[in-house]
Length: 409
Image (cartoon, rainbow, N blue to C red; front, side):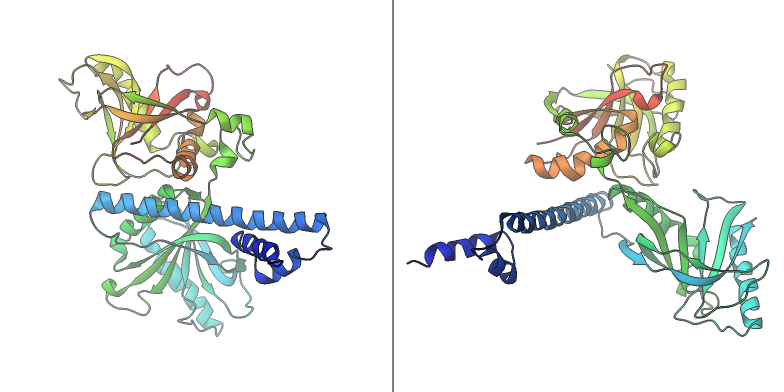
């Protein structure tokens, strides 16, 4: 019976996740309070890290579920996050008039290596690095490279250098002709956005099986790698990026719960993918921002306007059909202007999050990654939307106030 208190302490420490070795140390009667605090804080840090990892995994599962619901099948491309080690390479960097010139650039590089007695290895496939921030049909800044196992002297055309490693690279494998590789890029962009990442550097193509080893383009195998960085809502809401949210600021993020009546929106639809939230990271408008600019120019064409503007999101980003509308509330949807569409939203319960335009992307990440998993509510199968209840002012557009309406059950 005298051992029961000790046994209970062992069980309590075990329940906290301590190992048997750690428990043995914690049971010492002469253990200073400072050491006890140190071990407890260490365990607290470990648990916090595990919670963050599980929340990120939960967000990825939710994104995968939304994608399956949207497409009605398993995704064609599987995206994994991997670490890329630094590697010594021989490379040629040039501005290409046509992306297809990559083959000739690789041929030039291989000829140089062959002339210096360097044989290519199937275990070290060649690659291309694309330095432009977006895809360009003409004038693309590209480097082709071949990994090296030893030192080699370069020249004015061929550079010998170490390609830096990447801590987190989103990766997909495309099997087939390069003519159909755009689908893999779209999948990579959609995954990056849906899982709370942003681009962290130039993307790479690794030619696992290409023209040098396969004659049939349908047998080509290419890996696409996109360096990514997780965007933490904790570091970007509601103030400047890199500054942590204070407890007072966090309290302002707590939503109010409302039930909104049914309404109808008429506006310009958007089809495609987005890479950056509006006005984020010092950039100008993204593709949706361009839609809003056109909507503002054509606003007077809409009949029966009776309410504010809405950014209505009713699907996952895709390149086949509209999933977002920049529009205005109307009392009746008739004589819809050319190129516009209408959508009716039924009465629904919402969690309402006030924010600014500059913090819009981070607000959505906070909702999906933190608030929703911890709130005890269930996301409803209904559109979410941005509610613009004030006109843009003369100041910085990033400071424009709005509210995000998140549908819940």
